Image (cartoon, rainbow, N blue to C red; front, side, top):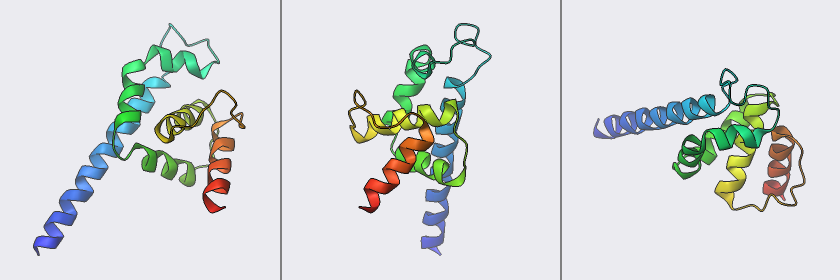
Length: 116
């Protein structure tokens, strides 16, 4: 019974962290922000939400959450590009010579490298 309580608590903590990560991602990609709403540059969105982005890349569980989000969806928009950039930062990847042009492409490359 104690194991069930601990497991339930751990699941609640994970769900809480996932919700927080999602909220921060949503804030970054919010296109209602007049400062960047006309920009198509993902880096503008990150620059405009530096604190949220820093929180995401520093939170334990962020990488796993974003990889799971890629796996659950076939979307390939702004959110996925920002998730790919965050994953690169977490993994310490050098993006100056990146071999991808979209978040989905990054994820496909990630899976290929992981399986190799």
